[in-house]
Image (cartoon, rainbow, N blue to C red; front, side, top):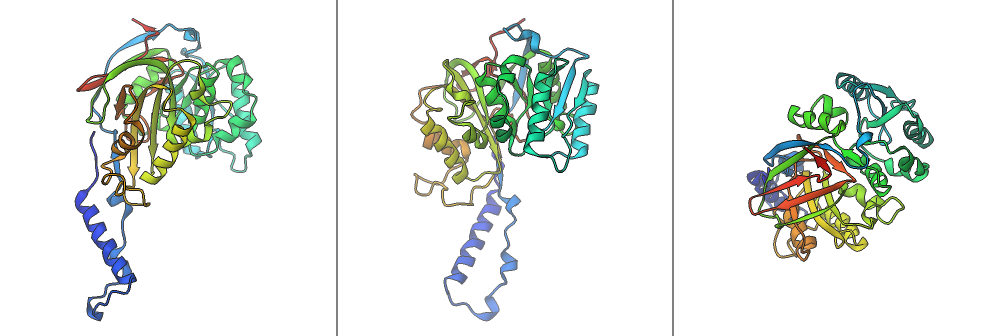
Length: 376
């Protein structure tokens, strides 16, 4: 694990906070020693840190997917719906997705309400149901994440998902869609959206391009001190931790499968308090106890200071999110755990085939992820 926490700046922030508290508590100071609060303003970006984004990773090979949904992967010339069931994207984001899909050899078809400023929930649902029901559309590419895809999933005709069996591509808030797809037994792709054609490193974009066509990678990643050795197989489910709390115990909760699953989790812009809250929801729902293995992805822009749950009263300050998760939630689980797969909100976002059987193998120095239903 590579942590980008800036210790000297954290120390400076802590000292400044102590000084502020002392002044507010009525500690006497000479007038000429008193400083304005503007002199001790805290720059949040100075102490946010990220885990998992720079894990060394190697694509050791590709295999052609040969499972039950092999014919559902895309081919050159296929029409792909471009929609946004989450937050409203900019015109530039939508155009990046459309032009990028053209470069990849597809025929993108934009939904009616992708960039309509005054669009409604009904409009978002209409775009998604159109993408699923139109027989000429072979895949669904989301422009961006954000918020509120859960509202769309909850109000749509979810039978369309299992009937159409079309892959949906996205991540972050699109986790709600992954859960709906995977609970219906339909695979999906956890991968970059418009950023795949603008900001994503070429090595990640190349893997995503291949995965859309059924060329499934085999990943090998450097291990970390937090990994738990072992091997497990199961359906790959999960995504953004915060969004996972929104789907728990719903009709489209992918952790309620009647078969073993591997749980993937990532998140961004959280403090320990928020992560603890979300993980408690997963724990109390049984999602952690029923997992055959766990893959922890990127935790980006984590705030180690905000909130009152920093580890001080739990055996010492948390060294990071992985440290907190292993100490507070995962220590008693006798399953393989891999920390730091580079997928999520970091610079790198390697795609994952969700809703299909995956094999996780964790050794002392590394871990591998492969899909056994893909063949050479």
